[in-house]
Image (tube, rainbow, N blue to C red; front, side, top):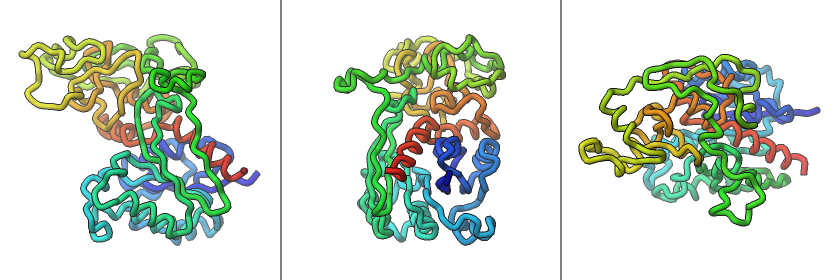
Amino acid sequence: MKKHNVIDLFSGVGGLSYGFYHNDKFKVLAANEVLPDMAKAYSLNHPDVLMYNKDIKDFSAIEFHKDTSNQYKSIDVVIGGPPCQSFSTVGNRLLDDPRGKLFQEYYRLLKEFNPKFFLFENVTGLLSMKGGLFDYIIKLFESLSYKVDAKVLNTADYGVPQIRKRVIIIGTKSDISFSYPEPTHSNINSNPDLFNLPSFRTLSEAISDLPLIKSGEESFEYRTSPQNDFQKMMRENNDILHDHNSSIHGQHLIHLMDCLSDGGTTKDLPDNLKPKSGYGNTYAKLWWNKPSTTITRNLGTPSSSRCIHPKVSRALTTREGARIQTFPDNFKFFGSRSSKNLQIGNAVPPMLSQILAKSIYKSFNI
């Protein structure tokens, strides 16, 4: 059976690669990632993929074909998305702004590899960037003779226990048609037409089998047996719990978190405990029976965007963040706690990538 060859750009730890790597219809050949810890973690989980740990401007199709002795003449799919920071302040002079070079490198490599299909993922803020950046990127891709579609997907619609919206841009050559995957889960309160689908997965469904450790504590053992199919899927045959350790919080901060109820914010605190700075969703608890809000690289910092555990007075652990992002418990991260949290917070949830990979494979066979 012929497999479709895949290249992953800006791969990070491999969340987007995951769905293609674990699908026997695809073969991920190479990945590019500039950050050493990210690249190391990627290789730990995808050992047979060529990792180019370098600035993307130094990576080329010529180098890849040389390294593989021109064995893979056809690349079928290119996936990836430039880091969102590169789009935060891009002005009108897009081509002259060095902060806008990353999406141009993606374009350059599309031109070099000329795949039949590409997937470009990014934050929804891309849609409203100054200077018409989104429209410019679409036209740039279309100039390579791709038929281009874009859609905002919410990961919660696909079984991820997290509200996380991302722009998914798909490019196909003229003889290929693509349909975005239909939701598998639904918030029936806002989507009554989808009442027949399972409801959104909640934080409780994702992490209730993990020990309720306190600030500064660590555990290598599960709290309970798997409580649902999601937990069974995340645990597989994993016996030892890794990366379930909490950073140490000061007593004042712990007292502040003690005073927060499920889903509580600083508005619910007595005046003497209210922080002097921060936003409405900082120092805020998650809801136990709702999906998590968007996980970020600062998931272990209570003063960051809503990331305090509903049941214990601490921020999320690395493993809890990984669960919310749907990384299985045997997935390996690398480096310090902050580095591992960056790897998790920046990733595409593997569960979403699996669904996208299936939709892309279907497109090749319509």
